[in-house]
Amino acid sequence: MVLFSKYIKKETLKFIDDFSVGIMLSATFFSLLFPATKLTNNFYIIVFSFIIGCIIIFASDILFDRLNKREFKNNLRKSLLLFFSITLHNFPEGLVVGTSFGGTSVLAAISLTIGIAIQNFPEGAAVSFSLYNNGVNKYKATLFGVISGIVEPIAAIFGYLLTNFVNNILPVVLSLAAGVMLYVILLEFNPNESKKKDLSVLIIMLGFCFMMFLEFILD
Image (cartoon, rainbow, N blue to C red; front, side):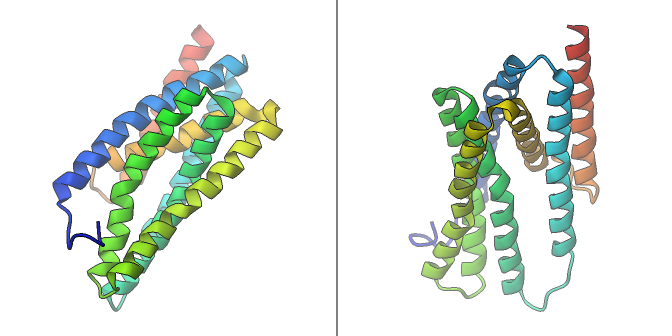
């Protein structure tokens, strides 16, 4: 987009983002959580792993928020911070993709991959356009956008190998990935713009875990 245009409408990015949220929300349940429940009868492990996945993303997001609150002398440094934040944010998403290919059906894994790929479009555009608007030439800005997403296939390979070499912990990995993915979805889709948005999402996730636990023990 940076190479062929000077800007992109926010409405377009919002449509892409919302569409990908729907895909990933469905894939979280049908490609990650449901397969995990079929692999083990120990639902305590599933719930605990799910919560751990939520906490990992919660902690990393709090760290990014603190970094973003720091005052910078120019917008270019803010753009670079955005680049590093999105790059680190993409790593667990890559793990989710690799885990799905290692522990679920190919079609389910492909649907999840498509959802994440679509969701990465506005993220990459945000990085590239932010740098471009702050004086970085369009070729370098495009390169930074590409680099921010390269961590995902690397993490996907790691996640795939993990599920294939350690099959005994596959339910744990799938449940943890589901927690990571659902937290990311809620964080991006949650309209709450308050300073405690992360805490709000975490409370939602705890409510989800509570109901999931009740479903398991009452089944």
